[in-house]
Image 1 (cartoon, one colour):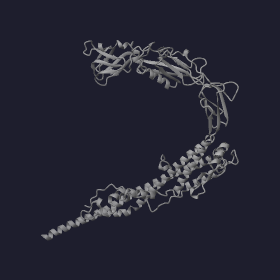
Image 2: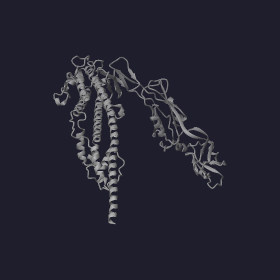
Image 3: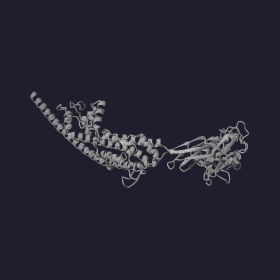
Image 4: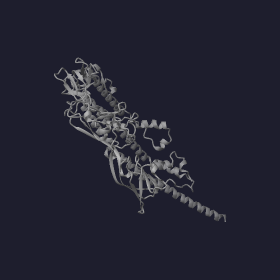
Length: 630
């Protein structure tokens, strides 16, 4: 039998089967003739399969070109993102601020702020309302605010005690899933006055037999030997139930009624508008500590920062907002015995917050603000300290932020140059038609380094002289070089007028150069409005549109064209033109593979017929030989 894997042909029958998708690879042939049928068929099929190889190579080329288009769209998307930012007025009207006395006042300026100097004097910072416990909440020297509230109450830690909020539970039932003696209530921290502490719990077997178990809470009273009858030990802290006999699976435990403890309270604050009331309800089980409760208050939306001071053994609560926010009462109001009795918080003892006050630019009268941060004329002022005297003042200077705007424009120029360079490099690549995509058979006989080198050449030039990208580059150059009409300055209406020109080197393909940095900085400093309008103007006519408006339109149109042709990762092949071509090639490949399988089967059938004839001839010769021998 000829071995299909050791064919004398350069291409084995296994390679052919893999290429065409044939599954019948266990043929036995050449037994009678001794001919290497697989080798002969492989050679025949190599010639027959050349159209298939070409179709697969065309498919690979199409997919490479599609992927290159998509990479160009990713590149253009990055430039468009920068362009979108450069369409914003804030990119050109940035302001810089400085303070003559930053220990009193600092400031930031928005794009609407004018260049000016503001003087603030007689500054008094706003303060926050706060409230402290009216006295020590404990007399114990070893009071530990990180202990659980359950333990603190059990040890009598609070001077005024703690009255738990009692929550009632009636007829709680549970079905036992497996035999055992230990189970748990749905709730822990059972109230000391709960009737369950001296009551009974009923257990009903699956057969209907009911048994009552007397509840005990003192372990010393619990008799596991049954000498005290049916008992169940209740751990009030955990809600654990321990029966003195094993309960069988399927039994039902029924607890008539019990109550468990929680800590419930609410805090209400007055919002910064001085009117809106913000109420927040809190609920904790006794496992939490005092520190945890105060942390939860501080992290909530009620607008209060709370802490326990161990030195004074008092709780302090401070509003997170400054200013006198509630002229008709306390800014922090308390509801719940835990706050008013245990922590000794009294709203009437509150120290009210105060508003910030200042004089600005010698205006008559004193200006006020709830907050130490306020905005006037597009400038946001932040008070940092109090004036020590009437002459203790600070001057805030607002100017154009030339450096920031210059960097924004410079960064855009760099991004634009990098983008057009990569596009030009791609459309200038040479198409290496002498390096078609490798077949699997070719790859199997090559080294990895050789495969990489070959594939790099084969992939080159997929977008050579591409019309979509070439047109986009031409349009982008026109977008940026054409004057913009209707700007604040008739002499500042194109890039060259602010010191940005194109590279004189032809090989740079229209690269932008900030040829006169000083001229650009002067334009930004002296007339930022005109610079902004040159880049951001809107209008229906292209001549009136700013550079970024034009460029953004070109980028969007180009990306849409590429997507219509090459799609994106989220589109099906039927949604873009190259995808349709890919589907068509795949269909033709599938049909041709079927045809090749039929051809291969025909070859094997012909050889099989020859083998059968040879076998028959051999049998006849053997028979005649036997007759002659007689």
